[in-house]
Length: 266
Image (cartoon, rainbow, N blue to C red):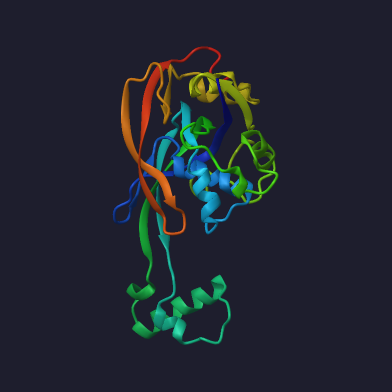
């Protein structure tokens, strides 16, 4: 039997950054490992430049039960930033606020006598709304976490629960515009595999969430651990390597789908 840190993710919107090309920013249908580890690091107050601590969290094995994939929605998104030439006009400022940036953009348009020089960057971003996931994290018996690199209060899976109840930084579902709609309800359960551990977890608000699952005839599993009823093994490029340079590598995960029982989610 192994111990698992189990928690639930639900929000009005979620976005799990797929590989992006050009101005298209797609999303996986289920949580990425990099996003979930990032959420955990935020709860613990670990910054992206704390590489040693980040590397230890990367060792955790990741599993997720998708209770509802949610429905996709695309957002037409624009952002603007002042040009280097515009910034040169006012080097005396120690810091810039958004009003300064807008003024710099205005200057750029006036100098060029063309709205084309406003410098807007366009993109299309995919989100999923009303999705519901149950996540399990556990230590890899062949690559155990060195808990000594963390603070004294962080020394085992069970010690993470308090931080997830009172996170040090804001938590979100893939993007900062996607806050949690419910508490994580983190808990430690045991099982022979992630499926058993997640199925043992007891979450609140299930009556309120029943509208999300009442029409679902099946649940889908993705796990870095072998699943007893796995139907295939897939490769996914979301294993974090370096959070500062935003580098990822490939990992393998097992896929399984099964008929939904009346007590899922529990």
